[in-house]
Image 1 (cartoon, rainbow, N blue to C red):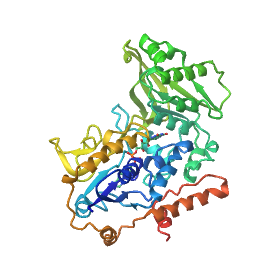
Image 2 (cartoon, protein in one colour):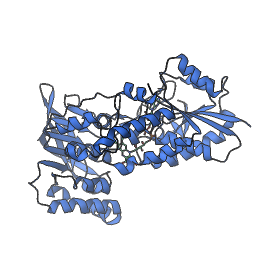
Image 3 (cartoon, rainbow, N blue to C red):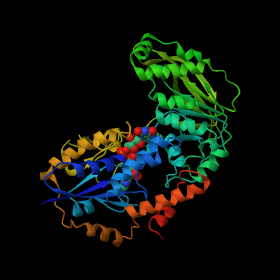
Image 4 (cartoon, rainbow, N blue to C red):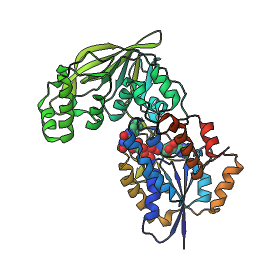
Length: 450
Ligand SMILES: Cc1cc2nc3c(=O)[nH]c(=O)nc-3n(C[C@H](O)[C@H](O)[C@H](O)COP(=O)(O)OP(=O)(O)OC[C@H]3O[C@@H](n4cnc5c(N)ncnc54)[C@H](O)[C@@H]3O)c2cc1C
């Protein structure tokens, strides 16, 4: 029987689901899968994006782990495509590759002052508080007043982590350096700015409601933001999600404030104009007040307002990174594809190369969406047998030999189990679910049992 030797690059949910789906699919051939991951730990943004105080979502890791623990997928951790392994290598050892490399960078926001000191990307901050090994250990939390641009769930995650008292995060898996950084933060006010109105936000009711449940943090909303136009009223009347968001916000309007030591301000109808600065450092944020345009959007009013602050985070979306030898859409930050079949500059299918997850369709959607996404891609892999590569060295051992010959300190599933146990053990004496190991060399050492 033919065997499909398949490489999958990226062990986030998209890559793991793709492997699972293909192994369970009805097919006329055997499948042998190697999953390459640049980090010594799998699970992508579930481990390094989802906020630490969202244990229910972090729990999806258990389902992903069950797939890996079945033992029919080999995992090569600490192996970066483009550095440790190349497209030519993959062609030599596999019939096809699926890229599921996600997105970890911030999308750009092109306004004056964005490069000032004190201006940060939300994705970088998320990587820091979730203990990603490739960002610095310390984060400059020196501002008393902080701004966050964006009205998606990532903006709310960032605002919540900034506003929450560090001790209230202690039961979670936050790394020690993150707790210490947040504990020392002098922040008193976090301002969230959204270009449109409450009926047009992108965040979900659950995430919004959570803000109002923070200990010792007042929620501040402004009456002027609730002067709805007809389109907003219709959205509230016809869309359950918008209805709940409006209800939550209106409950906050009735609350008495002033007791808490920290405040989280929500500013709607605030279109970013520029960051103000002195001596190269952020001192404020200027926005243009917008108003509903009657058609579900907004238009500028010409009125400029400035809020004094010392740090500003832009949570305006994630962006994928190009991969060596693989077509890339610079505008959208994705691999150009048709239903997961990678396309070249002339829109022709590139044989043997597929994409799934955020690198396929852009950084939107929940973890669950990566499953349906993977189904679509996998269907093409299964049906494309005529297009597969013909590897000259398809044996599984040849891949271990290649990595060993290059001195790559790769980790495997047993290594992940060791690291997982180690983190759980670190947390146990402190009554915490786990304490993440952050430095990459330490992760690798623990994984390799050195
Ligand atoms: C801050 C934040 C919070 C979120 N919260 C939620 C939530 O609460 N609920 C929810 O359902 N969804 C949430 N999401 C969305 C969810 O994380 C994504 O839908 C999902 O992770 C996308 O999966 P993916 O596998 O495509 O990408 P990723 O999860 O990014 O995985 C990609 C993997 O590829 C690896 N990789 C990248 N480049 C290479 C390379 N060159 N070589 C080898 N490996 C490589 C990466 O290290 C990573 O492990 C959140 C996202 C963010 C950013």
